[in-house]
Image 1 (cartoon, protein in one colour):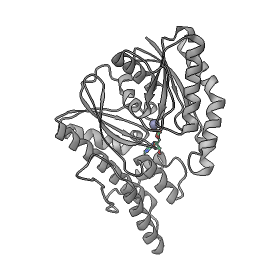
Image 2 (cartoon, rainbow, N blue to C red):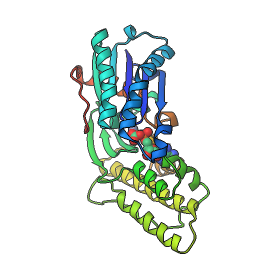
Image 3 (tube, rainbow, N blue to C red):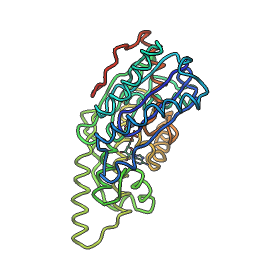
Image 4 (cartoon, protein in one colour):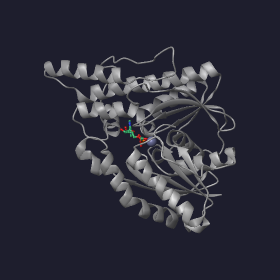
Length: 329
Ligand code: KG4
Ligand code: ZN
């Protein structure tokens, strides 16, 4: 089955063609990051206008690169949420217009779950059930992916997402946007134990919370500034280590609690080099099977949307003809 994926939930306009939820034919991503940099974060109005400009050429390019025509497509999969309303609506309307004009079925999928389905494009066999961790600019979610690929949600962030904390700490240190990759790079020259930042574990819940950690960084930065020293690589490394430890610890606890030994990761923050390295070490130690997408499939892309669309279609046997953008899934 040939699936056309469309993704416009935040600041990447993307379209992809995927066969049977696993074989990637094309994955075009037009990033708007340069337009938002000057503002230190994503400006929703700019994002939706840029999506509008890019959506048709990006879909055309995805079809061209895959060597197919829109008539050949069997199913259209689009991110219906969560995301920025003005951005989501561009992708959803484009998908609906194509579905209507070319009489194609359409399925609206969850952006958060799609991040996990990036793994199915890389690994031919993924044993289920699995504990899934999605860490991105807007989300930090933990859930169980059942054998039939249905989802049992365990927890989410109560305040800042982990990626948002990376971006805000980078802003605080005047490092630029997006903060994650910059902190990742600078942290390589720093000492992770230089400052003992808190590891917010919320022991009675599967939820996360990163705003306290962000405030702890702010307090520490002020103290160091008063002393006239600001060892940026050490601050980056110590902050990053606290985020990484929290994410790993909570995931391993969930594996033990539910007796599950497969772990799937997804989302932009999973591109973090320290997180990837430390997760692999810990998984080996705990006897867990770990699945991590390649870097290009960690950040937002439509290939993961097409993959999830295929499996949703298979599992539910029916589609969401009346797709509407939705802020919560
Ligand atoms: O999944 P994504 O592309 O978009 C959302 O759905 O939010 O994730 C973007 C987030 C940003 O907060 C960015 O700073 C973070 O992922 N990120 C990273 C790294 N690369 C991207 N965070 C830490 N280390 C990285 N290497
Ligand atoms: Zn995302």
